[in-house]
Length: 578
Figure 1 (tube, rainbow, N blue to C red):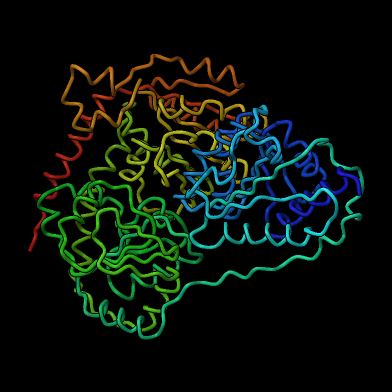
Figure 2: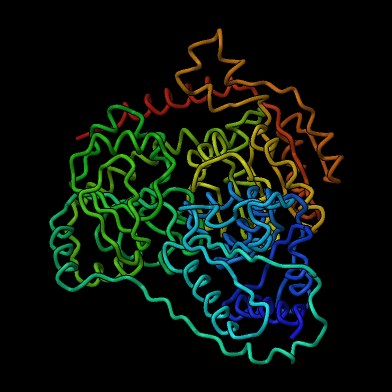
């Protein structure tokens, strides 16, 4: 059998395995060595193809789509340094638990370490940042390994979806000629022999469950802390769990518990503000801490937790060690939804009734102060976030937050509501790279996507705007431009003014209107709050990418936060603490 037909049969088996295992999207970057896979992907109606010239952007684009779809997305690139450009997004996917199937074309073995162009060592090149690596071997003489190839691909995709979810890498060495053989899909009917994988949910044995029933049952003043959780059905389960126990839920924005119908009761949303107050932090001492999901973003919560001596239960279905501050006393590896449901069926409500009321009263006091920024018409960072998050973003929208200051402002100003808004961010490795491309990926799946981003993060990934244009994405970008790294103004190095601006503030002086023009995006620079609100409302009904730039001042934003915390302190001082 000739080379082209053998190669085509094996590559079709790879694509067929992807389709049979739930993959419907592939992000492709152009290249020579990946030619046969790209051409064959194009023949399948079940596959939606997205093109992105820049592999670094392409990988983040796929990351965003996988986040939104909650299932794997495939990536395809040529050999050489193109594969290395995938690495930042793969790292993010690994730590954020996002399933990706990374397909890298490669030179055959006889061209390795021989000076061949676009040839690097791609074997295990992503190291421990992928859950599995396999190489697709294509024999030169026969189809004897077709069944092995199908099973290998199925195992890889199953690994990507098994908790903790994450990326897998399939490297595909290909020999020339690279054009696949022509022929109908009927020529490859043998590919229908696939293996179905049924993933299970981790649960606890009965005696372990009983131990936790007793431990939790003894607590009177517990708190529940929720970050981003992989488990399906968690929202309903945690709501019932909290109701049964009478414990407040300190919900990180990415927990998806602050927004939605029906609202989750007993959610505390201003903890980052009031836990920075010494009197409040000292008065709120739990006898049990139960934490679900990823580590929350809040520094105020982190510092408060370090002061506590209560038992701390961390429930993680991914069976990893999510305890950076070494506070956990129990690491419980089971499905989060199952844990809540199982415990709810076994526990009687024994909580101190005043405990929950105390948290809610303090939270409402802090929220009263924070909500004042929704009424202020001056165009500041805090006012924009407060009004945008609680008034302007409509139900049914998706909100993607950049890292550094945007995610922290989101934590401070996103109040609980019955709007159906999904929240996203790249909080795996917490980097500022690839944010635009990831948000574009989300927007290709979910309508009315809004990206909140700072100027340095926007600059890092302006190439993502080309992917948005070429793939006809609809995306509103709120660009907070404070001419540099705003978060550094809150850190200790800000006290060294002789070096601060040069090393950390890093003002750039860029006019982003030119970037919008370059990539064909709509652009508006807000001069006041009414201009901002109108520009945002218009963007919700407009096709394509809209960039709304909000000029801001880094130093003034620090002072605004200081004034906010002072007002919260004064309000809390008026409360009765007995």
